[in-house]
Structure formats: C-alpha cells, structure tokens
Length: 360
Image 1 (cartoon, rainbow, N blue to C red):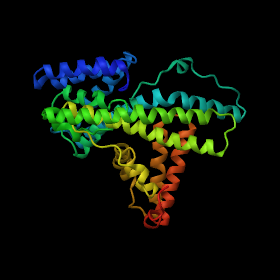
Image 2 (image 1 turned 45 degrees about the vertical axis):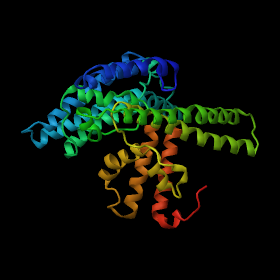
Image 3 (image 1 turned 120 degrees about the vertical axis):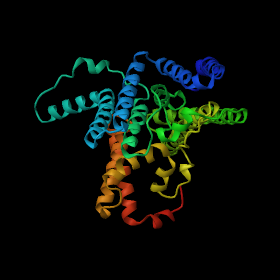
C-alpha cells in the first residue's frame, strides 16, 4: 500500500482517521499502532512479525540500559545486543544474497569453480521499509545509552513510534527523543488537521503531477537504443527531478499525515538543488538520514577532530556506508564511494572557495 494508491486514499486513510478520533485520547497511540501494522502487513503479513521482533528487542534492551542500578557493563551488553540484532536483521534480509553472489563471482575468478548459492536465498524477499525502522528502533537504545533520550513509558508507545505508518517505509527517520512527549500527549486541533491535510495534498500533487511524468520521460530516454546527446541529457535531467520530487513528495505526505494526528515530524528536504557545494547539498537532501549518519557514525569515528586525512577518511567511509544502505549492489557502493571522495576533496580544497561556484 502506497500513499498515492486508491486503497490508501479512499479506504485506509479515512477509516484510520475515523477510528483514531473516535476513541479516547489515551487509546489513540494503540489505535495508530494497530492500523500501522495493518498498513505494513498489506504487502506481506509475515513482515509484521519481523518488525514486532525488532521492536521487542529494542524495547527490552532499552529497559535494561535505563534500569536503575544497572552497571556500565550491563548497559553496554544491552546496547550491543540492540545494535547487533538490528544490523543482523538488516544484513540478512538485505545483503545476504548480495554477499553470496559476490563470493561466488570472486571464487570463480580465482579458479575455485562455481559456488552454488543456498536455495533459500533466491526466495528471500526484502521486507519493505526495513532500512528505516531498524535505524529508528536501534537509535532509541543508542540515545538511551548516551543519555539523550528517556525510557519509553510503555511498550505501546514504543511500538507506535517504530511502526507509525506516515513515516514507516520512506522516512523521514524520526528519533525517539523527537516524539517522546508527543507519544504521551499531543495537541489535536482543527487548525493542525487542516495544515496537515494541506501538506499531504501538496506532496500528493508533487508525486502525481511532477515525479511520475518525470519518471516516464527518464524511462523513455534510458530505454532508447542509441540516444543522441540532447536525449541523454533530457533523461539525466528528468531522472534528477524524478528522484527529488518522488522522495520529497513522500516526505511531505509523511509530515502532513503526522500533523493530521497531532505529530510534528522533522523536515527532510530543504531545496537541495539550490546548493552551491556538495557539502551543502547533503545538508539539504534527506536531512534525517544525513544527521543520523553524522551523529551515529561520523562523530563516533572521530568526525573532524583527527586532522585532514582522518576527516577525509571519515567522510568517505560514512558515504560508503550510506551508498550500501541505499541498496545492495556495487552501483550503490560505487555511488557512495565517489560521493565520499568528492566530499573529502571539497574539505581538502576548502569549502568557502567551492561555495562560490555557481549552482548548476
């Protein structure tokens, strides 16, 4: 089920909102959790068990971290259990086939013969949104360990945080500390509902009127047998507009849906194509992911505190991970590697000088 589908627009969303506002305020988080599980299970009901498993692990690990009297060693064990469990789930479902195929190709190149793949891997289905909800769920335990968040009041609140359908499958990546108080008590008003509905309609129009036509134009250009230069450039431009309008449209719809139910989610895009440097671009594009990688990977690696070479390596490594997070293929790995290299080069040459280069 996607936001622009008929089943979502004319059945799921109206019924969910009706049920949400029909129950007492104290039961609304539970209702939102239940309808979110229905939303997520629409693709494959078994996926809900995986999300519930990840939610339970991080909730109880978080409880162990925040438990009064817990030793530093116990807190660290609970943190490691949370992080390793989420990364194991993500690694198995998203990257097991990729690593197996890569291992087989390397073995063939070095003369070890063809290595048969385990049969179950060819039938493995990637759960929708697993990259988003594992990051969100895992960040809760990390923030508790760092003292940047408070323990969830109950399992329902935490399950609601992980599963909220507005931002479940396409972001923005919402941290628990951002919505902790809203889960317990949030303001519902006609003004807020209308503002959320307006934002949702804005994103919906962006998706239908801009992203989809740009996607069709890009497909026509890329499917051409031997496109000339104007056609190739038209395809590149159309694709650049498609991915921006598509992704930012879903973020707008997510923010709008959240507002309709009293939540305020962080913004995820800030006119990235107006950027005058690659560094500025990544501060404006998919802001929630960029800040997530900064706070949970770049800064723990040392950030910019270890000198020019170390800073450049940290930037490159973070974007290598970002590319791998986006997709399990060498094209995404290459994309992350060269973006990281360009960012590192910007840092070496000086951002102020590059920032004066006019935007394309």
